[in-house]
Structures are given as structure tokens and as C-alpha cells.
Image (cartoon, rainbow over all chains, first blue to last red; front, side):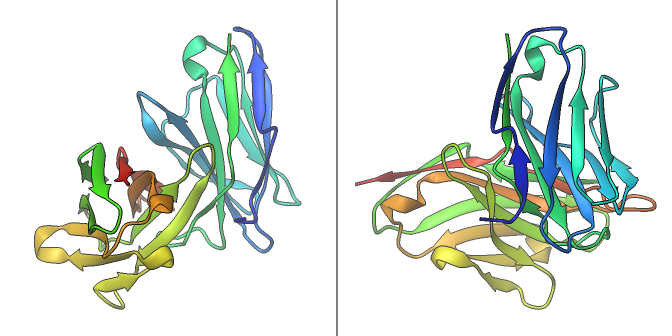
Length: 114
Length: 116
């Protein structure tokens, strides 16, 4: 158990809908990262937050957004969903925000868009 | 920018044989390198991390990796494979860009198959 908690574990929704994935980082970690894992794209870095502020952006679509709240939990919002958004979404956390930090991953949220 | 190349999307070894999973990286800054393992239907678990303190890094479950700067490689090895090692293995490099970390850049993964 990495200490990173993600909900829900599985989600099935229809195209055009909006979903929210939730993440609680490890106790004491200030950085939260979101990754997408799909068969064709592999593991893609989406976005990073540090202590409530956006820190770095990766390959995140404009239809997707995230935020980190004062209690440090984070949410990833996916809207206008398409079939291609079906993937495993990971949240991860680390103590700091500089490169070289060890990043710990949650179990992931499986999203299926039908 | 940084990138990771894992040679071989599938590697098959016999139980008890040497495991060698290859990883080459490219980084514009001194790299931090990681190996993660993903068991079926599970998240990513950290196996080991290179931090420049030592070129040979020991991880969990008997795995180790050697950093070779001249070859820009960070190959993962285990002397004797066990059936429980069957999983997907990912090599990753820590990035740096502008004012903050870019998280990790992952290779495409290597599926390790253990033959009885």
C-alpha cells in the first residue's frame, strides 16, 4: 500500500458526460501528479500540483482540468468524454516539487467510456 | 527534455534464470532514474531509484539496477527469476523544466513472462 488513495476504482460512463476522479496523497506529501495509462499512449504525465498551485503541465487535454484543495486532496475533472478517454488514471504524490523526488502511485481509477 | 527507451516490449525467461530488462535514457540534466513494477490490475510500485549516490542500486524483491553514464543506460537485473516476478516493468526518468518538476517520463514498459 503506497498510501495514495484514489476513488472510484472503476467508472463506466457515456460519451459526452463528465466525471470527477478523486485522490488523497500520502500523509505529508505536498505534490500531487495525475497520469493517464492507455494501451496506445502508455503512461502519460498530465499535470502536477504543489501545495494547491499548478506546478507543471504535461499532455493534458483542454477538456480535462484538475485542482488541489487546501487539505491537499486533488480532483481530476474529465468532461465531454470520448471513447478514446477510456484509460487507467493514476494519481501519485511526493513530498516536494523538485525533480528527483520519489513519486508514489495510487491503485488507479479505471474509466470506461461507452 | 528527457526520454526513456525500453528495449523489448516482452521478455520471457525461465524460472530461476537471470532477468535482464533494458532501459536507456536521454536527459538534459543529471538524471534521477526509477524502475517501477505493475502487477496485473494494480498500481505502480517503486522497485528502486538512482540518485547518483551509487551506480549500483539495490531495490526490493531482489532486483538491482546499474547506472552507466557512458552508455546512458539503467538496466534492471535479478539473478534468479521467480514466478511472482511476472509483471509489467517501467523505467522512468525524472524531468526538470523551467520552474518546476515535470513528473516522470516513462518508457513504454516491458512485460516480463516467467516460464515454469
